[in-house]
Image (cartoon, rainbow, N blue to C red; front, side):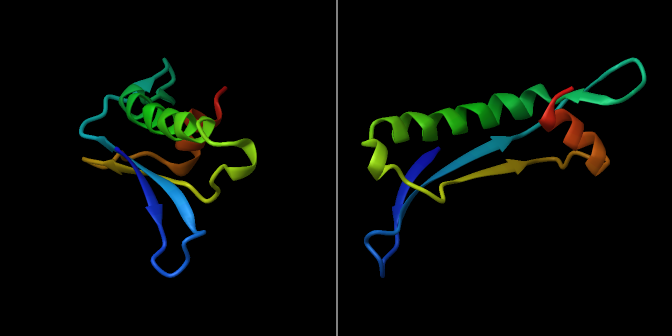
Length: 92
């Protein structure tokens, strides 16, 4: 979901809010057991980023919005060490 929001007290405070939901995950691990990918997470988050990008592209360059947000709800939680997740998000 993508929403356009504007602050009640400041009409110039406008931003985009994208929401993504991941209902189940099947993490992909390599032969050593390291987490290498989370396809369901990628399939939920990438469309949210693309929706923000498409909406921004419709605006003039000098009128693009800042401080946009992408919120991801993951259920059930993914149990992994923080370092393992860093490797997935940063790439090899």
